Amino acid sequence: MELFINQILAGIATGAIYACMALAIVMIYQAIDHLNFAQGEMAMFSTFVSWQLMQWGVPYWGAFLITLVFSFFAGIAIERVLFKPLAKAPILTQVAGFIALYAIINSCAGLIWDFTIKQYPTPFGSSPFLGSQLISTHQAGMIGITLLMLLGLFFFFRYTRVGLAMRAAASLPESARLVGINTSWMIALGWGMAAAIGSVAGMMIAPVVFLEPNMMLGVLIYGFAAAVLGGLTSPFGAVVGGFLVGIFENLVGTYIPGVGNELKLPIALALIITVLVIKPAGLFGRHIVKRV
Amino acid sequence: MTTLLNVKDLRAYYGQVQALHGLTFSLNEGSLTTLLGANGAGKTTTLRAICNMVRSSGTIEFDGQPLVNRSTENIVRLGIAHVPQGRGTFTNMTVEENLQLGAITRTDKAGIVSDIERMYGYFPVLKQRYLQQAGTLSGGEQQMLAVARALMLKPRLMLLDEPSFGLAPLIVRDLFKILGQINREEKVSILVVEQNAQLALELADQAYVIETGRIVMSGDAETISNDENVRKSYLGY
Image 1 (cartoon, rainbow over the protein chains, first blue to last red):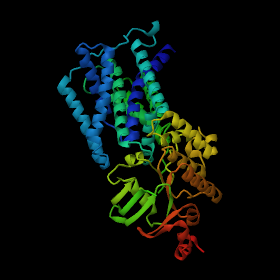
Image 2 (image 1 turned 90 degrees about the vertical axis):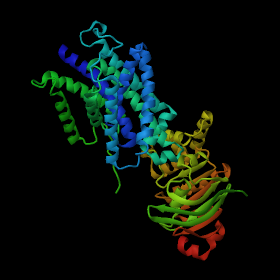
Image 3 (image 1 turned 60 degrees about the horizontal axis):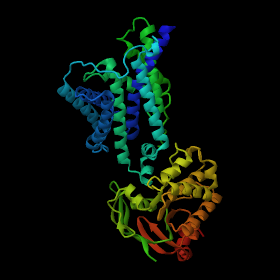
Image 4 (image 1 turned 180 degrees about the vertical axis):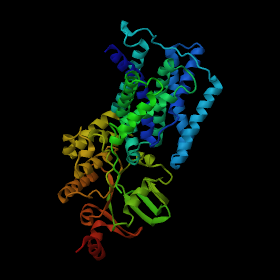
């Protein structure tokens, strides 16, 4: 029983990271109807920036905050420079844009910081949480930070005017323009926020997977899986999907003989395909009905 | 009387197809003007061209300022509220959020709160449903919400695209009565596109008739409604 609870809690901890990535993916998907393949690399680059700041002597939380702000503006810059000009381009052009961005960020990180694995600090320590053997303080911290961020986002979208305008721009761009909303900047803002959310995921997972330019690949795939599982049209679904994928991955790895670490990923993806076959819009997604 | 909206030689295109062929008309401050015409005559396109939602050429001046080359949201910010065909309701948001969105360009918080109450005064049914998702409202209620949302902008000019579409006749009467009231009491100039010519002519003081992308007749609403051709073609008696 203790092993079971332990695996559930560990699943929630990594699930929190998947939830962040899924949320970042859904935010951009809502705004431009495409999956951002470079989401993980953007988060990885941000994590390197925070690491570099700490190398220069900035304390952890200072580096954390500076990185959030940096990621936010970098996200906006990427949208303005790369994706605004591509907004009306055919889908394959946009996909090429995303892949180019992926490769560029990955190579740049390798060039600046090289491909050797680096230790990344945790601000929470790694001792048992509150004396319990079930979960470490870092895992508890990961969950706490994620929940705090989700709460903040919920209030932002629910109760602020900018949040309302962003929701309007994502759901009905033409109507949004007709009430005077600059939808183009709302998309840029969405990119900035997605980049900042991703950077939190990167900084939280880095102590677990270690810092290197390819560290986010697995996380991104789980993030995609979580977003699709929850339904790409639902931020709430993305978060729930993240936690579900995290828990499922851990339970399968522990209890199904022969799965172990190597086969966790395919099994998790098999689950997702099963869900999608039964419920194509994801668990919480809206069916989009189009009149023809 | 001063001219609020001045449209000269307006041409509009959907891809290669030209939909408006040099439209010229104007609208006076404080007036309620209607644009009549059959299906496909270019009524909706005219409204969309004013808000730069379709490729067009020619001059459009609002209160002396040129609108061509301005983005839709900047045109709206000048005080032109557009209630599009199909109403453009944010269906997955609540009634109150829809009204808040109508005022999204305003900064006077207290004014917004009192204006929302004023809208509930015009349309009491919206108050009963203020926390309901707008998509669950009936067609008539959604049209009321669309008009209320447009008014939240505190517009100087309101463009209405077929407000009677799909509504029961009694509801249309009510709605038009309120539009007349808004025009008189709030001094909002209104340009309304309608298929229901009889009702529109009763309400309006100015009227234009549009056929295949050209204005073919203009004048005050009473003269137009007494014109024999208009009677035969649009009023059906």
